[in-house]
Image 1 (spheres, rainbow, N blue to C red):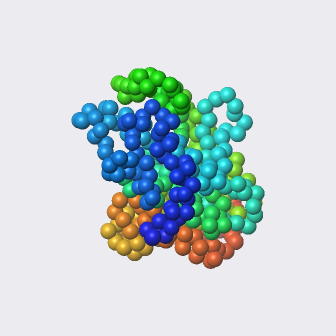
Image 2 (image 1 turned 45 degrees about the vertical axis):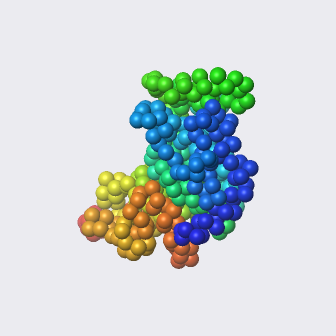
Image 3 (image 1 turned 90 degrees about the horizontal axis):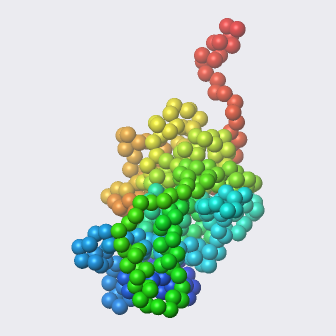
Length: 376
């Protein structure tokens, strides 16, 4: 999406975020002294006193403490963006598995009528692998380039304005670390009276990290499992909807995995897939399946990092299974925001040109099959 268009979208929800500012979010933790940052009017992360960008080397040349501080910032950003998804984008938080109660659970977000409104587009967002969570394309891009480039909020706002319904996946929320959960709870405790207690808690957090105590989250143990569960229990249940995907990095591999696992359902429900600098491998994942190869050729388009201008052809000799164009940037973490406007144009054109084809499990007739029938 063009930068001025993204800026317009950002400005529309900034007045709301002033009430739900990131600084107020940090004030609820015990890291106010270490993280004096907030988002300015351009949705860029800046120091509240110096107005300078984020500095990693806060503790002079102490890598482990600086890494822990960066990790704490990332955790606070995740919680903050969850709040924005619910309070600004008006999305609903849905816990999975749905029947679970007293066990660690993952969750995702969706618009209010995502499963009920008919004859509308359902857009599914599937990000890259990493420490970041739902609502983020790249944690690093948020910190160094702002919410308009690293978060999925401009994409969600654009989709909602186009009367799309939206599902925001959370594929990297795969386990709960009991040790870290206890530390986060200590740091995020509100209204602690003793400043000395706050200092002790912060010091404990930045001390040497102990071994992880991880418990996998059922039905979301991997990005692939997370995607399959939400497809089976939510997306596949929708009727009369045209489904589109935007997938980034490893998300492309996850989508191709879903396509193989749920071949007929996906081919019948999904009308367009926008891949962004994807990590999929057609040869390894789809093999020589003629139907799948034909389907991706007509329903997928990829935006790849390239020095070429946005939308210029960028097909390579090694990868030419479907159209590939430039994302307009050479940076992987900026490719989603750079290509956003082009992707929505692609969705609009693909929907207009869409023809209803019901894919079925009827085997493809080949010459060898015909010969066998004739000789029988």
